[in-house]
Amino acid sequence: MTETFLQNLINGALTGCIYALIALGLSLIFGVMNVVNFAHGDFVMLSMYLTFWIGVWAGMDAFITPLITFPALFLIGLLAYNALIDRTLRQKYVTQIAVTVGLMTFLRALAQLIWKAQPRALPYSLIQGSIQIGPYTILASRLVSAVVSVLAIAGVYLFLSRTWAGRAIRAASDDLDAASLLGIPYRQTYALAFGLGSALTAIAGGLLMTFQQVDPTMGVRFGLLSWCVLAMAGLGSIPGLLISGIIVGAAEAIGMSFWDPRARSLIVYLLFILVLWLRPRGLFGRK
Amino acid sequence: MSAPILQVSQLTKRFGNLVALNGVSLEIREGEIFSIIGPNGAGKTTLFFNIIGLQKPDAGRVLFKGTDITGKSPHKICHLGITCTFQVPRAFANMTVEETVRVGAYKRYQGREMSQKVDEVLRICELEEYRHQRCSDMGLAHLRRVELARALATEPVLLLLDESGAGLNPSELTGLMDILHRLNEEMHITLCIVEHVMQMVMSLAQRIVVLDHGEIIAEGSPQEISTHPRVIEAYLGKRVVC
Ligand SMILES: Nc1ncnc2c1ncn2[C@@H]1O[C@H](COP(=O)(O)OP(=O)(O)O)[C@@H](O)[C@H]1O
Ligand SMILES: [Mg+2]
Image 1 (spheres, protein in one colour):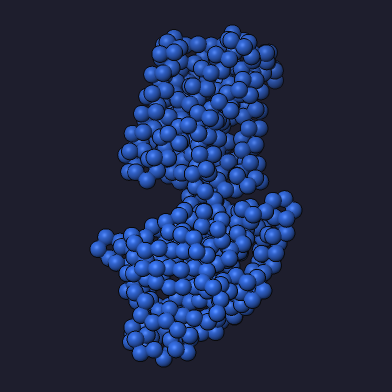
Image 2 (spheres, protein in one colour):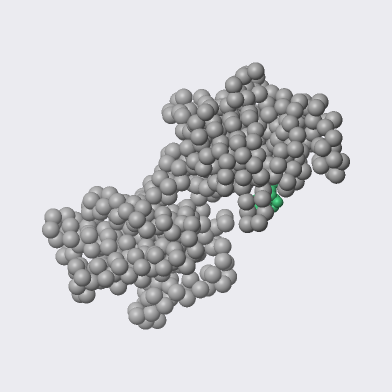
C-alpha cells in the first residue's frame, strides 16, 4: 500500500516536471500578453507528432528531436502570433478565445488528417533501463525527462533574468506602456514570448514521446494540465511552477492508481477547481 | 533664442463627448526647462500621452526637430529621443532598481558601456545604495527617482516629467530639483515639467504655459504667469496651490 503510493508519487513527480515545462510556455504567453491560449495543449500534441515523424524518418531518438522541433515550433509560434494573435489583442476577450479555440480545433483536425486517429508511438529510446532504490523502480527515461525539463526551465529562468530580450519580456508583461516608453517594441516582444512559449512544447513533446504514445485528441489533456499547473503556481514564479507541476503530476499518478486510470483528467480537473476555489492567485503568485 | 525642439500644433483629443485637448499649440526650445501647469483635469497628462504616442490625437500635429512624429509608437519616439515619466510611478514591480535601469539602457548600449551607463544614471539619481532593491519594496520618493533613472538611461534629448514632485516632502523636493537642474545644465537635456508644486515650477522653469479645460489660457515667464489675471482666475484663484 505505502509502497504503491510512493512508487506512484515518484513516477508522477517525474512526469510533473514535464508538465511544469509545458505550463511555463503557457505562463509566458498568458503572463506577457494576457492571451488565454486554448491551443497550447495542441502545440504539445503537434510537437509529439513531429517527434514521431522525425523519429521514424530520420531514426533520431526522441530525446534529440528538440534540436529540430524547438526551432520549428518557435517558427510556428511566430507565425500563429503574427497571423492570428496580434490581430486580436485589441479585440474583445471573446474574440481572442474564439481565435485560440479555432486554432486548437484546426490543429486537431490537421493531426487527424495527416496521422489518422490511431495512436502512434516510437519503438524505443536510446535511454533504457531503470534504477532500483529499495523496493522502488525509477525508469531511466522518466528520470532523464525530468532532468531535461528542469534544465530547460532553469534555462528559461536565466534567459528571463539575464538577457536583454528576457528583461524586455518581463518589463512588457509588467507594464506594457512603461516598457514602450523605454524603447521596447511590443510586437517583437510579444512575438518572441509566443514563439518561445510554443517552442517549449517541443522539448516537452520529445520527452513525452520517450515513454508514451500520441493521438490527435491529446491536446485537451495537456491544455487542462497546463492550466491547472499555472493556476496552482500563480503568475510570476518559475520555481512555483515547477513545484506545482510536480504536485499535479503526483496527484494524477496516485489518483489513477488508487481510484481509476480513466479518471486521469478528472483528477486534474478537480484539482484545478479546488485551487481556483481556495487560492485564486495560486500558491506562489504575485499578481 | 534657441531653435524649437518640439512643436505641437492644434492638437485635439476627445474622449467621447469630452474634449480633453482643444487645439493646443506650443513650442519647446532646445535646452530650456519648460513647464505646463493647470488645475486637475486640465488635460496635462493627456497632452503628454498624445505627444509620446501612448494615445493618438484626433487632430493636430507634433513635430520633433522638424520631423512629424504624430501618432508614432512610443518605442519609436523613444528611439528618436523623447521619453516621459508617469504621474503615478509605474515601476516594474518584479525587477530590481538596477535591472529597471538596464532595460532603459539596452537601447543604445551593450556590454561594459552599458554597465557604465547604468552606474552613471544611478549615481545621478542618487540610487546607488538601492540598486539591488526590488521596486515593489520602495517608497514613493524613491520610485519617482527610479522612473527618472530608467527614462534617463534611454538618453533622451527631451524629457517629459508628469508631476514628479507630487507627494514629496520639502527635502526630497530640493533633492529632485537639484537633479533636474543638473540634467538640464550638465547633460543638456531639454525638460518639460508638468507640476502642481508651484515652488518647483517657479524656481526651475524658464517658460510656462497654463492649460485649462484643454486649452492654453496663458503663456510666459514665471513672473508674467504669477500675475496673469486669467491664470489667477482660472487656476490660482479657484484653488490655492502652494
Ligand atoms: N482615458 C481616458 N478616458 C476618458 N477620459 C479621460 C481619459 N484620460 C483623461 N480623461 C479625461 O480628460 C480630462 C483631462 O485629464 P488629464 O489629462 O488626466 O488631466 P490632468 O493631467 O491635467 O489632471 C479629464 O477630464 C479626464 O477625466
Ligand atoms: Mg495628470
